Image 1 (cartoon, rainbow, N blue to C red):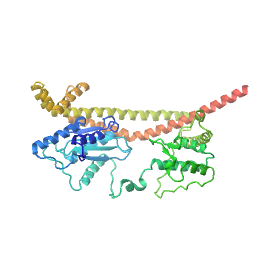
Image 2: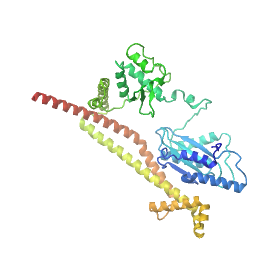
Image 3: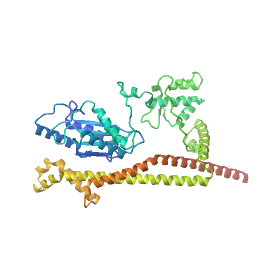
Image 4: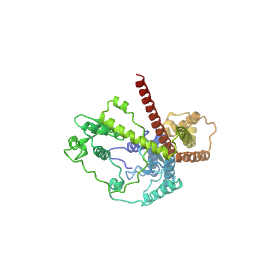
Length: 462
């Protein structure tokens, strides 16, 4: 990380560390850990070490390198954020050999959990700077791979280097853009041959797209932040061109099949039936009604197949299975949340014990100096950390400080409990969702039948 032109080192450090510590990315700061510094005051502590380096060595900073960053990503769905942070801490310790202060910020705002490890270019004793070395990236990857394998996580076994940009390197594995997804949805909807443009719009809404009309039509999917105008999608996707296809004045655009090997088709999930009457009362048109009826028929067939496969043809069996699946999921969820809460408490306590021990002598000198304002200003960072640690002990009700080793042992046991529960969590949630959805569909169907019988009985009495 370099010092930018026109900016002070302090401002540059603040920019980098503030991005890493972003509460929205780190679960309100819960996924932050550090070594020989406090995440809240990391900028000031890094700056202090650089001033001490100049005082001790008499040398000015020769290069504009002010800190280093390691980014470590994990396979989606394979790791918890807490374990990722723990591994990131171990990676930082191993790579810097404990000679440089660092923070670890675990980000959970993307599909893949990843770490930002920022370490000070100045060593802890303030006598030297970190020197990057040849093939340091490979050395770093080897440490990361070892830590991942020890925790039974995936690694990239045969990484391939490329001179091209990341999108080109991804090739066919590159995720579809929002525009391309919209084009594919439009192609699929036109393949159903809607009779009018209004019917086309209803089918697009049924496919999960929000529509905005005005001078130009625009659509927004569930994952999009902004609307995409039809005219921005390229040839064949303007409003006039789509109307021409619907009216039979132009052929539908030929959809190119991907040359990439298609993944195996996954088993379709059971989806809830659509309440057609309610949707029609909300202003949905005839095109939507036709789509919803076909959708409901397909989902009832899927529901019946699901119940047959799982041998749940008796309603009492379905009801009992729903209760068991819900109870299993709730139990796993409770185990994970309980472990997470205690792990967070332990990590906070470890940090405060470390800070308390590190600053105890300075606080003693401050007290002996008669709580001098001058002394306080000279040692503001250390005294702030000491007071924060004492306040935390009082808040947690800690009278006798436990050892770091005892806390780490408890933390490791909790991680083991949590990881075991987490390995079953996603499967249990999927099973519960499918069972509850199937039951809701059956309940709805039975309710519709009861309403129909009551309606017929009322007509007979008349």
